[in-house]
Length: 166
Image (cartoon, rainbow, N blue to C red):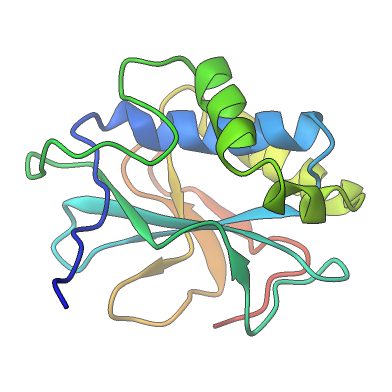
């Protein structure tokens, strides 16, 4: 069986738009939707997975949306697009498209989780306008705190509420 290439983007601003999309989905009532971001060993790809928390916690067997994805944060990459959007689209279009593509599965994320939503909102505010945060760098395990790759430098914040080290 031929291995499929993971969807990638050639626009490093997509990382920020994906973060903001998740924040927008929280505002739409999908409060138990989580994002797990990291960096590839090369330092060229910001990786992420989007999933649904169970009872306010990240499960050891998470319910993810699709495969793991990579967004270029350096100069390498391919011409592939993410499954629900294109690099030229706005955060609002990303959000609407994500809802359309995953409308059935997304209902599982309609469980209120204000503590996590507030943590995520604070992270977005503190890393604005262009920062993207990480929880791990492959192949290392998860870190003890969230930090940014690039701006703002020397940024650290406690891991999110409900986070379970994987």
